[in-house]
Length: 455
Image (cartoon, rainbow, N blue to C red):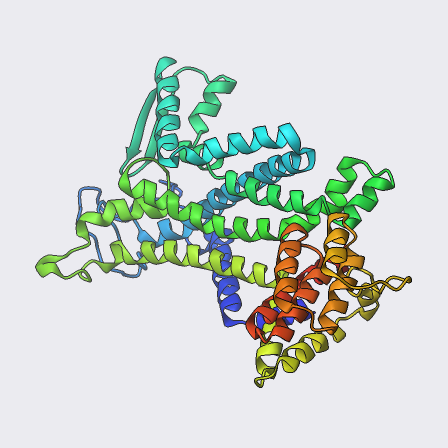
């Protein structure tokens, strides 16, 4: 419930959800909103004479006017929504799956396998996507021509035209239905997911709960499914949501410039581009040939970007909350920062979690003499609790804060998911009077704590 309240507390999140709901309604109810003609079914429906090339303004039959050749703008716009959803979701889902699979495999295996997969990823990143689109398009075209078919690239009204006169075999049917742009975007868009997930898996492998699962004899598949993927999936969903809109924008762009693509919205812009500027240079004389399609492409991309931001806010909700809590409580004193941050810790739903050693490590049973040497040695031996306890004892003695801050910055770089280290770093910054840095460290501590609580 708290996540829902946070989601609907932002007007940007609501706007993104409303826009996607509107597009989804158009896609699902297209047959009722703008039924297909029984005589000439198709996305581009003609309402007048084919030889009449002047676009007609909106009227009772054509709610958004017509394009050259008297094609109904509203009909194409509505039916193009479903095509945009299919294309965008296909690209985003497949690329995310491929990237997550390869990134997880490389990160968990490590060593040579990780190096090989990451070098392959780098090679794909270096290859221009537009070159891949042209190459795959030409490859499919040559294959169809070689078996006696016809392949026409980017027809103004029908996109890529494929005609194979012979009875279709399995491969020929696949070639006829292939979308070069879809294949190209999938082949050259999985790399960011792979690199992101690989980095997260390499970090998560060193956490205590993963090492404990390994010590108890859990299988690699179980560890990946139960511990690694759930903790690495949130940023993947964020990027995938944004990629849905980005893929549709790219499809419309490639269709408009004539390289590839079968975007209905892009085809509307292609058919009406000669009428964008009317008599006397007035761009609004034939506004219906470009404004509706342009708005559809822009709003579709904006909607998915807003949804991605909303998912990101929900998946890591505590940073913004702690920032507001602390900023509103700062009155010029370091104590205010610490008090506001600790108050937020106390408001967590399950306060028993705070008693875990990962968040509030207890001092060792045997008394120790605090020193930087002892703390550094504990970090080298991965004894996080002992190191944190020693650093906190040094802070209470006001011992050379700048050296403690330097050590702790190195420690959180090595163990970025250890909430206790981030919390201790925040205390050090707070004691040194560096309030903004203390705020950032406390925010990181709470993010790590949130991850621990959800395991």
